[in-house]
Structure formats: structure tokens, C-alpha cells
Image (tube, rainbow, N blue to C red; front, side, top):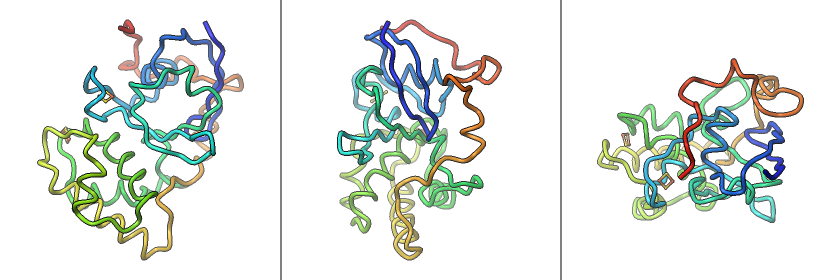
Length: 200
Ligand code: FES
Ligand code: FES
């Protein structure tokens, strides 16, 4: 086991993990962050996308099924659950996905939204082609992508006209309160669907 320390959605968690544990499994099974999901085992679907701070501190989108939890030691992670603003106001990308009907089953949506946030942080005014190319690492089996492109275009314009940044706001006080002092969620806060499963 290796001791790691992550800041996830603004809250610090210190945990012992096996070196082979994938970041996505650590987020889901240890921290109860079940908004981040797994859709494949070949790194192509993007359902597991989260933002992770790079060595320079700047957040970038990563597929958390291709990152070991130990590789994320010391980094800041933002999941879909940390994206809404201080009083739970939706992030502009979340809002536009809702308004543009850019989701159906919702399974790709957390990863798709995090990838879109990453894209808009890099390119605040993308063309439709740039949106499609920017999200090519994220698969959706329901929507046919058209409404996702519209939603990202709307979000880009809302962010620009509001003078906002695509980068997530700081975490809510509730999120910080939810963490125990030594990190990790108390057992009654871990949702049932987060029960551990064997790591391949
Ligand atoms: S779960 Fe499919 S890319 Fe990560
Ligand atoms: S909304 Fe179902 S996979 Fe995208």
C-alpha cells in the first residue's frame, strides 16, 4: 500500500492505496465520487474524464481509467460533482447540456461535460469542428452528438458574454464539510453503488 494525498473537488483526502489502483476506482470506491463512471476498458470512451492539475498547477482533462491513483498524488482533481458553483448553481456547461437536451441516458455526460470544460478553458470560442474534434475522445451512444455540439457552443457564448471562466468555481462549504478530518467519507455517505469491485 502507498499513502497518497489528493485534493478532490476542493477537499483533501489522505488514503492508502495499492499501486495498481486506477484513479477512477479510487474516486468511486474510496471517495464515493460515483459521478465519474467507467464505460470501457480500452481508454477510448472518455466516460471517466476528470480534470487533474498538471505539474504547473493548470487543470487538464484526463481519462481517470488510464491514470494510477498513485500518479495523482499531490494533484488537484475536479470531478463532475465539484463543478457546480458555490450555492449549487450549475456550471454554464451543465446548464447548456440541460437546456439543449444534450444527454439521454446520462452515462457519458459527466465525462463529456468535463471534457467540454477542458476544451473551453483552452479555446473559449471554438468552431463546431473544433468542438467535435475537441470531444473526439468521448463517446456517446444516445444523442448522436448534435445537441452536445449545440450545448458546448451555447456554453462557450454564455461564458464569454458573462465574462466568466470555464474553470470550475471553488468547492461549496457543504462539499468541504462532507469530508472527515483525516480525509475520506464516513461509511454512511458512500453510496451503495460504490461498493468495491475487483481491480482487473
Ligand atoms: S472508462 Fe472508457 S476511457 Fe476511461
Ligand atoms: S447520453 Fe447516453 S451515452 Fe451519451
